[in-house]
Length: 200
Image (cartoon, rainbow, N blue to C red; front, side, top):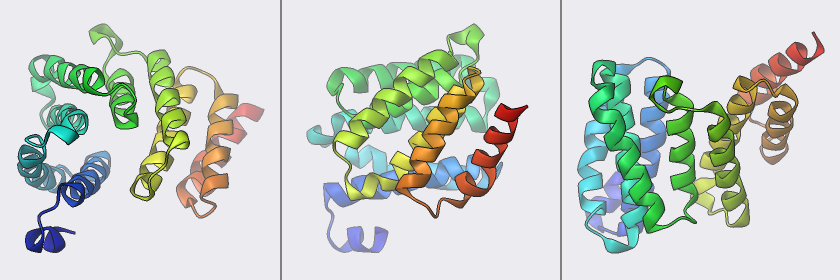
């Protein structure tokens, strides 16, 4: 995609590149590979500078910015007090720009899920936000959002699990598996684990 964009700069393609980078950064940071995560974050931030100048992408650009600031917190937790409010502000601005944007609801869910309760985080609120993101995605699911939809279902299941609602978590994972039967992480690890814990 980057090679294609270099030959024909197109905002939609740039957005798709940023979306892919967003997923890749999250994967690396979730795998505790901070070196690769930071490398791709720096590249993504340069692309975001361009996207943020395009009015039609205002909500998405703000959502990316909120997420990227949160990624910076993962890289340097000591800066959470300074960066956390900035991330929240960008996500709120993204919501004001387009409250029907599922990506904004995903970021609200992520912020609520990963922020410690003492700083305003709430797993219960995360369930609400992820649920709305899923609803919006299911109403209109572009092909480039298929992985994002599955990722959001997993986030919703995890939020249900953290609030003690294993039955709802299992239902969400079953929905993900019905949508993508080859989702091996859900099929072989998460779902068996949640089901066995429910039977205890």
